Length: 563
Ligand code: DON
Image (cartoon, rainbow, N blue to C red):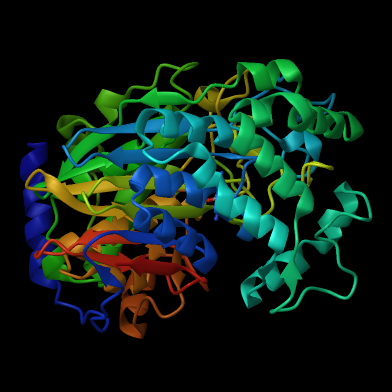
């Protein structure tokens, strides 16, 4: 019966929609022997050089992760965490979770006052906001298992650039300038990034402390970060600002290999990140639910497409808030959430004529979404090994604390926990018991590094920053290729929309929807607000002739390099 109703619904829509014009076809960087796409031109060059020296996709990914920590400190990092999804040339796939963890000393109510109220910004700014960093352990493990070049060679470019300096882009200068007040609040006055007269495009930034830290990691691997001098710097910094991370926390940190989430979308295999990211499960839920609708026929950003995506997204984000958390601490009903029967039932009450008020889906109360940073990069080597990594400090420059003497920023990932049940985090995301703080637990993420297959072969490597909008940015990029027949650069350029259940508001990029579409949606009861940019997708597509097209997001300084 449910399925019958569903079919009628789709028939109704098919008759009421017309095809929308797609944006101009543009072709990105094309190469046959490798492709790397990152948020920063210097980091892309570092990765490309490693591939050209004969390194594989994992070598390049490790080198890029460290390079981003030097040239893109707003989000690139060694003081944060992330996730890697990979697919080897032989078709095997896997994922590595190097997400931060709560300290052994953390507790559920650590950000609440005596009356149980949240202490303003404590989980977002300053030392107590930092989780135990996972990046260095993650890179060591990736390299141990898959690397082909010596570890030292992968660190060498980062040490060199930190020492000899790099030239700021306009975006870099803007990022450094907008954080000045917070840098001053949480760091000593001689902190490297503080500059009274302001940063300008073309300034050179030298980072000797970071170069020394990178050298220790180059020479001692894991111990160069979690032990010895770097660890002492971290612990001294924690003591200076009442932070929690201890030597015990650093000793106990271990990245985890996890089975990726797998699903299908119109004959394409989807490989994505499992919990503690919500990204993979939510993405598969979205794609499987969208499969029932003729998205390609309806066209990009038409009323029918926007309406059905919005309704699906509301239901998926409501599930995220309720059921998802760290699988090592909470029993996530993964199989049920992505099963066909569950999703058919979950989507069966979508009404083509009106938008379902989010309060009818599930109750909650939310706040505004803050503008923040994370970063994603995609790598494919000459054998078509593919690595998809999203990494973050959470907010831009994390908790704004630089580890004095060691030269790197610490994350503020603790805010990704549900700090108090029913109270949203900075992205307006709600959580429940599944994502409450516990010692050594990983906070729930939305990061969605993903790989798409077609006919059992590699098709696409994709991911994005953007907090709660990461999942929907990846979702739309995949649909742009599969349903709207776009190439990679065109799919990345296309305007995006986003709904996350609560707040009950459709967010659109400027000019994503025509005046007529906006009018029709408002007539259906939509509240709509626009934003300059949603997500920043860096992706690679395997073209029919086997060559690779990079899609570097024009919303930033992103660069694709192929050869
Ligand atoms: O893990 C998460 O979902 C967030 N900490 C990601 C933050 C983010 O994407 C900020 N970006 N623009």
